[in-house]
Amino acid sequence: MTAFFSFISGILFDIRLVDYLRRNRTIQEDHCQDLGYDGLAVLSTPEVWYYAMKLTEHVRVERSKSLYIGMQYQPEAGALLWDDDARPRSDSPFRSNPPSADATFRYTRLTPAADMRIDRGDNRKMALCGNHKNTASESWGRTVQGELVTSDRKVLDQRKLFSYPECALLCGMTLDCRAAEFNFDLLTCTLIGEYTGSGNMANPDVTTYIRTTF
Ligand SMILES: *[C@@H]1O[C@H](CO)[C@@H](O)[C@H](O)[C@H]1NC(C)=O
Image (cartoon, rainbow, N blue to C red):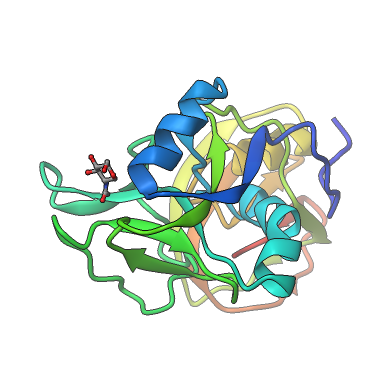
């Protein structure tokens, strides 16, 4: 378990670019399923998001194309959700935040400018296909010695773990995790969600993992 740092790999994220225009979102989603994917790609974590930005860079930047991705308004939930039912993280890169979607204006596209916009889904666009039960197997971030200095923090979880790498990986597997503090003395891993504040304070017992954000 050493691959935590800004490392881009095509193997760990199984998403596929469909770089031709099909009629609409429904037809693109069906096409993804014909290719063996669960549907359109779910880009719910910063790690998969940056991978998708690399994968689509040429079609977005050189060809100014938008792509359908796997997020839509779910009337039963009354909310915009990723197609694996995950709720988008608060720092998700929407063009206008919070996004406004409803039962007719319900789908999402990735724009040439690398943000997300709500879309009717009724016209021709490219697509990203993916599986919805991805288990994260890597996390991107950096390591700082000491604990975070925060004025406001949301603790998501705290548990006993034996090593810092396990703590960093657990953060990467937790959608809302932004940072994780590992205490070598107590062997505790604290997962932190949204926080305000910056910098870190020397504490020889604690190493902090700062996860990449959107
Ligand atoms: C896409 O086109 C098909 C066939 O014309 C239609 O059944 C479907 O409702 C359309 N989907 C959207 C989102 O417009």
